[in-house]
Image (tube, rainbow, N blue to C red; front, side, top):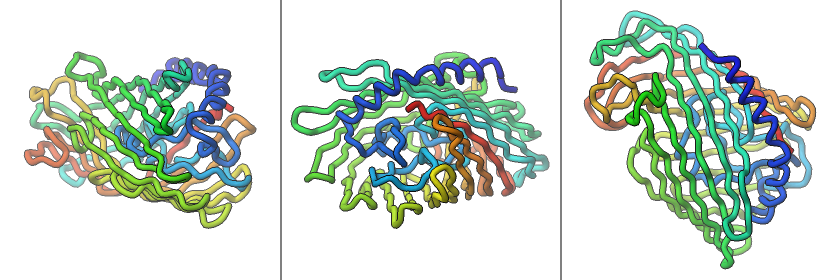
Length: 379
């Protein structure tokens, strides 16, 4: 089901990027200031909220707005906690998750899902003129034990769905104080990735940040994700309001809010068009241990290799409630254990997420799930 050799190779590669990441942290202060510090641990710079819209993590609550730089406080490392799944973490990580066997609503049968993911991000170049260039990538795979069928294609539901992604980001600061950037990544999400050019697509993002006073800014963006809920370019406009160190919000599209009423409690909320909602509360018990709970919706698209209609996608949607715990393992690693309740899960074939003409809709009964993620903190 999973290639253990591949897992080990990529883990070793991720662990080997520490020297470059340390230099990257120094340069990031020049471009993004100190706001990317979380619990005293240096991270990748805060990604624009528009970037999250391009690739909502399939089985994870979206990483929510970065915690503002505060005086030293209790915490357990990186933010963006939630049920594991491909694509969510901003640091090198390995994760696995399990959705035990549940009955199908739409037809006799059951479904069990076991999945895993590896992702990384590393700086590859930086200069005063071209800014910071960041290479990032991920590999994720879900294995399905089910007797569900896709009758319109005359086949069983895929045993495995895999997503491979490799991309390049650029951030730079202009002389007038504005920040600009963009991202392009090549992705193949399919039962047979890269089987042909028809199973490959590109995600694109361009954004501009215009300061407004000392703490606030206007954000303008253009996003395109062919496998997203809206498979056409989406403009975004939001106002980043940061009145205090404990509160900040992006008001507009996309929307996000981050409030820290005390050093130990953090509340986050985010919305991305059209149905992506994420809410999270975290309690930092000690410097190395934290608990969290949250709610998220999740959708994802795949291109099946044997489809007759090349515009057709296999979509998945669900809602989930999660609770979990995070532990610092020394200075370099964070262990995240989570469990939750998944409901309203469905799979269907269609040319678009919201369009008519859905085929082979498979609804799955609610149930529990569990996950584990190991993150590497490169600084």
